[in-house]
Length: 113
Length: 112
Image (tube, rainbow over all chains, first blue to last red):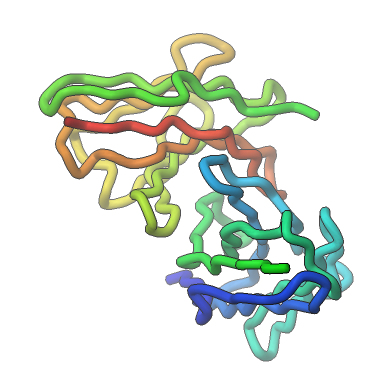
C-alpha cells in the first residue's frame, strides 16, 4: 500500500534562507509525485509534480523538487524563502495505475523576518 | 486557468441532518474526487468517480455517504445523517487521465 512520510511537522526558517521540506514514500509500483501548498483558510494548490522524465522538477513560486527513486524521496527545496511562503505543504503520491492520491501529514513552513 | 468550484464555502448543520456539498469540476476532466481534511490533520481520500460510477472508495466512505453527477457539470457529495465527527473541510477535485489533480477551495462543514 502507498504511504507518504513527511518527517518534519514544522520547519521554522528566516526570510531569504534556503529551505528543504522532506518527503519519503513507499509504494510497490511506479508512482507519480506531487507537492501541494495550502495557505491559511484556503484550498490546495499544486506546486509541482513528477510524472516522468527529468528527476528535477521546477514548480511555481521558485520551488523545485528532486525525485530520487533509490531513496524513495521527493524533497522540496527553495533557495531563498519569503514571508509569503508561510503555509502548510503536503507531499502526495499516486500509483501510476490508479487515481487515488495519498497525502502526507504536512509540513508547516514558518518564515520569519 | 480552469478552476474547480465548490459551494457553499461554509455549511453549518445540526447533527442528524442531511447535507449536500456541491462541486463543478473542470469541464474536460474525466475523474472526480472527494477528499476531506479534519482540522489540523492530513487530507484523506473519500471517493473517486469515473464514467458515472464510483471507481474507488475509502473506509471512511460508508453508507451514510453518496456521490452523484446529476447533470453534465455538477458533482455532489451527500451525507445522509451528519455526525459531529463529520465536521471537516471537504475538497472536491478533478483530473484528466494521468497528471495531477485540480482541487477546489473547499467547503467547511460544521456539525453542531
